[in-house]
Image 1 (cartoon, one colour):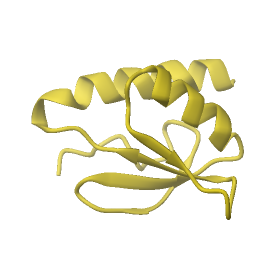
Image 2 (cartoon, one colour):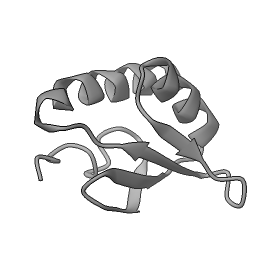
Image 3 (cartoon, helix red, strand yellow):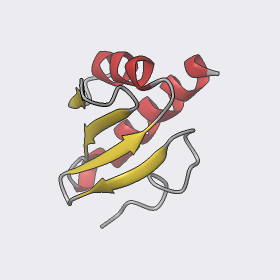
Image 4 (cartoon, helix red, strand yellow):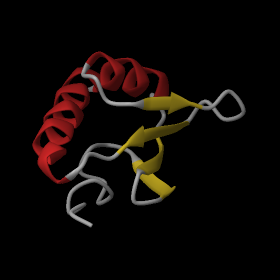
Length: 79
């Protein structure tokens, strides 16, 4: 996969798992990440059983720049 940045802690959350289609992340402000990524059009799912978990979809080969831009944008708001 072409996942060089999502998962190295660069965005302020910890990657807890995932597949070729999504990543499961742990963040203290998971609801804020959920809101911001949804607003950017990134498929995202919160978890009621653990409010620090968040799952977000990974793009096809042409969409990595859009996902990275969304992550950077939400990270700036979260600071």
